[in-house]
Length: 326
Picture 1 (tube, one colour):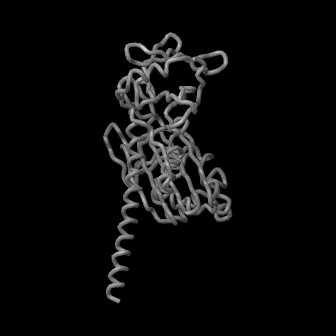
Picture 2 (cartoon, one colour):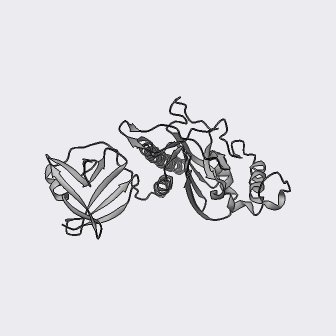
């Protein structure tokens, strides 16, 4: 009997270690994803994952203010953009009857205020001006000096300001089993994405105006489900065989009347864009980035191993495909 108990103890310990190792591996992969998007300047902010209402992952990336180098904290809030675009529309109807105040402009706004009060959300505000604990907003822009960190003025419309922990509580009030929503400020410097699948919630809040947050939630969901996922490549030039460059040279059809010409010169690859000759720097054996701006080209092969098309990337993992015509 003692031997059996000892064996069960060893098995239980091993299982616990395996689960911990798997959990640690998941956190490592999510951290890697967050760091990569931050490194590229497409994201700066908060990632939160919750299962069955419990937070299983939470971390911050980048800075709340790049001029003062202020870091994010648990109380830092982000803008989710104009009120009309918010996920709270899913929960307003059930609360409208609870609010009789005439101080707000609409029943939906009253319902949101009631919900904030009901859930005791200390870091959630429905207002036009940024709260004192708000992150500074930025757009995504790559210029001659690299990633731009110039703050932008904020939207003047009524907005919801919140953090990931409060937003998680808001999501739990939504009865929908599935919810996918993302958005960004038209004039401000914030973006967000929410992905709810059954009992799993993934939240990305960013003080960068770049609609890449939804792409991030897809990658995080794949990590949690132990599925294949893609990471954007670093904007770092690598060395590749010059012979490969000749394979990529040719004309690619943007449309029936316009073509993009790719040429080689002095063991380098260039694309002719009108009068401009833009240097394409290799990130991998088949993907090249443009130094000015967050654009890249990925060359693709057909089933016979010939370069048949190219994919134009503009700050995302995927983009429009253009066929090679010669």
